[in-house]
Image 1: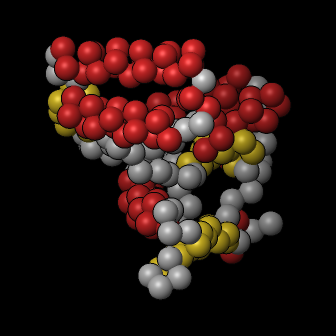
Image 2: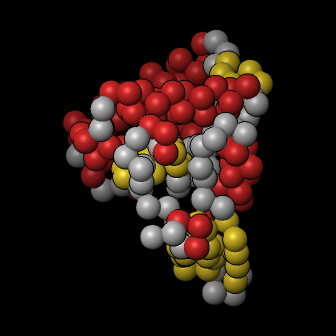
Length: 193
């Protein structure tokens, strides 16, 4: 199939998540531009629409015929896998280069508080042993976050850089035609590569 003419629509109609999908669309647009400089594909967002009354959002983007990483790892030679790893590291390097180092202690503490509140509402956590472990982990993380500054690169990041969100377009079955594709960008509580 001709990748340049195929598209897919990502949509949601949910009061809690339609704003997040809109943020994802904006982040994907930004990364589409950034990744052109390093020959990594990010599906271009063509059209997006938000409906406040219906609390819905959608966006249309390129569709690429591609393999997920696990399938790619199983069926391709080391030379091609090395190219995928090189592209992924290049992407992370660009994100770090476009970041500055900042103390994120306050952000981490705020996130821990929100996890703690969510934990109180979770029926699974009502189990005594699990609840005790959960609260011990939260307490340990808080102690770490308050003992010294948590300085990390802050700027831009994928938000969910997993093997599920890294695809490989390899229609020619050689490294010459191989392209790394990044999908499903997410917002993070701290934008750190």
